[in-house]
Length: 490
Image (cartoon, rainbow, N blue to C red; front, side, top):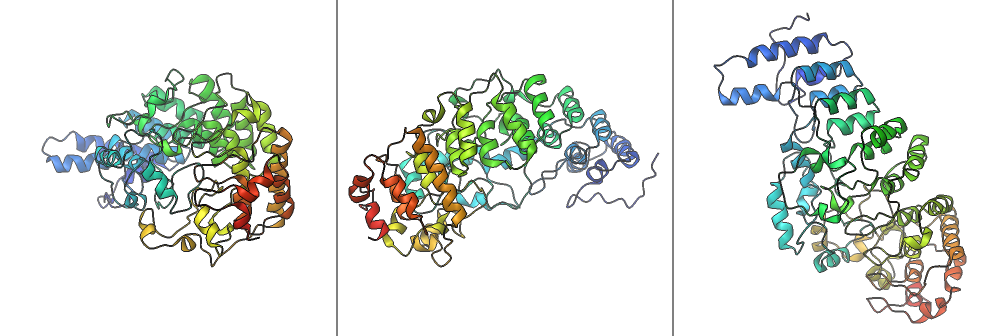
């Protein structure tokens, strides 16, 4: 048996000894620590405070924000299944995280949360019920109700992405993600650990196929959800992001997890696995591409499943890549093809998405009509920020020009121009788009093209040549009373 010293550091301000030992391939130290912890726990003369502290440094202890680390998570990240087995035998919680910590983390994903929650990386947030109550005061009657006027007004003062809210959850966080043991095992690709945790009773009830896909599931009215319901991800999402194809197959076939799961606790970024693979994963990774193929061939996949609230279809995400091969390939797999995409809740068609500026750096902010009219980005990068302050605080200090960083323009490159042309050509060849279509801001695709830096004359001519294109160019006014021609400055 490993001989423990009297000066072993049990300080709760850093990783506990058991967490550190759990990551070691040699299990001797971990085993000794677990034996000592069991012996001390059996003592009856401890105060309640001492017992809570002992629990914190034990096999189920979770380091809170910003770490969200436990012995189970530590051993799983290190790919040490025999340590996971030791921890479970010692009574460790197979979930790898407790309700308090996962609830605290998921508060940062609540729609309508206070903007300060987006930068609160080193302290706990307000209780979940409190944040939900504040959201209701903003008109958000439940978490997937239609976009409110207040939310639309806030979008008009920033430069949000087309697929989510102005402040992307986790965008400004300097903290670890709060993942369960099952999600960590899926990301690590360890079938052995995942099966061990499931056999030990880890909660996976939210991720099973038999869970209804009715959108009522997103109505966050109960703070007593189980751990899997409070997670902002799922094992399926984590396996895809890590390119773990064998794990994904195991989750979908053996475990019976749903290929359509949208995280309950993250309504504004609740991407189903197919959209998640396209929008948030590295498609240059061969493992991710294999996972994508497996998803598309799954008999229970709903390939037309949209995100809640913003109603974004997988083909909208694919269009945002400006990758015509990806777009054409995906459309061939999806029932209904391009026509199934329709519009998002913000009124964006596939052509709108193809013509949006990548970020706020890509618009002609020196033109006041452009600065006033365009405030929606195509980027899928969840970390990009259009302003230094979180919403809505930036509205008190920023003009539209400052929000768009007018002193730091990034014109389209030739390669970007060509990629956009190719994407629009794919949509034109399909033929099911209307150049007259307007989004929630009253902008047509031509408005976005006219306001983008270094826009290719060829691209502009392609869209103007569409049926009704010239009429739109000359006469179609957006919600700010501006035509594409005025934005172009002719």
